[in-house]
Length: 148
Image (cartoon, rainbow, N blue to C red):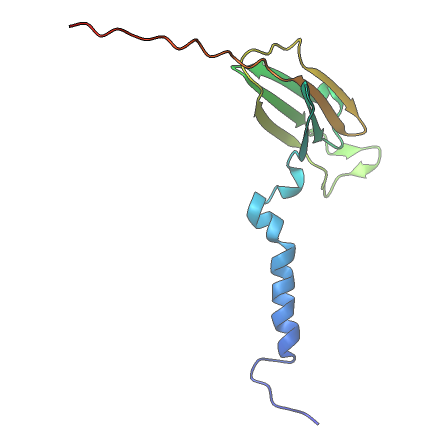
């Protein structure tokens, strides 16, 4: 038996289909169109240092730079694109692998130097060990005399 419908073939498929598409695209709305390319980071705190793990799949050691300036540690990963689109595999007609630059900064304190921070790249994960900066001692309370 056929029933008339004012919404189309199947009301619920259309309703839930649109909702499902919106949920799958949630990351794109939150992080932009490059959501898959962001530097996903885990930070673990220990008594004397922090461990920072940054996902950088597909990047080699020479494509990653670490810079320390004004208390900020900046991690930059850059992957270039070959200009020649014809290789022994044939002419490249579509490329879905990432090419470009990713960058992220962390405040680590102004008392640290580059010698204090250690870095290791294994299996696409950059692991950093950052010592905790010594807490600055507050000056003793001193009374200022008022003239007059």
